[in-house]
Image (cartoon, rainbow, N blue to C red; front, side, top):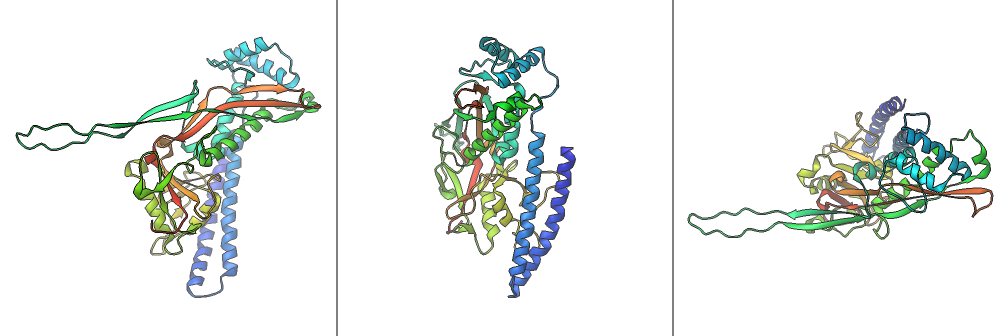
Length: 407
């Protein structure tokens, strides 16, 4: 059902874009002729918003597809036993703590032994991963790894050996040695604490496990996806816009290169797409295969209006085989509304091979503490998990800085 819905929305998007192009062409022609454009501008804005709305509908379909299945699906005997005991614990708080922990380890088949809570059901933990990927664009593009320690480390070779020529009979000598950099991404604890009225716990028809899983998943996803863009790395993930960003002409390892848009808080008023082309080519050729644009809905709405130098072709086009973002200059567009809106000095557009540039690190296991003491009439469910994120290849990601100046 979800597949048919998405296919229908993609078709609807293509049809809406044809209407958008026609109206935008009329707007461009009216401006060139010096005519009043108030009504045409409003109509184009309305059509742009309609395209954005189709994207939001597609996101909702993807969210529904990612909801956990807490029903009678296949499970091992250990998982079935733990599911039953865990459900009883959620509703009543009853159950032997040592036995529940032992069952949890068997059901999860995990070497982790989290303190201060019970390991959540396998379906609940997977739901957090699935929903997170549909709520944040960068999360769906980045390389994700699950570890059993507090830190992920990697050696990166930033320069290799160089060849040199030797004259006939020459003695030769040493060439340059390879250089390495060490990347370390730590995981930090995050929590989500939904609460439930005790009367709700007593209603057996409520699918409590699925509801709590969805609430926790959305809470973790919203917080994590914001950090992957703007987090400062202090007790949290470090976002792609929060590094030492420098003009791409002065790029050095450990910094993220940017191209200037040519206007403060906006694209350049003349040939705005030229700077976007420069951004695309700021990324080395070996990273462009598999690279994507990362942008918010509102900024994408501006980019949809860009045409080539001849004025004959739109640079953005729907992608029937892809998602809502479509393609710009031939590369896929991923929408992430955690990307900053257009503003003076903002980094509102990114282009990169994020699978080769950004790492999301999850610590295995999500824990849950049930608290029916703190607030009368309510039971709190404290979910905790550990994760982090950061750039591990600075060459693979480029930004656009919305400031004046040459590219």
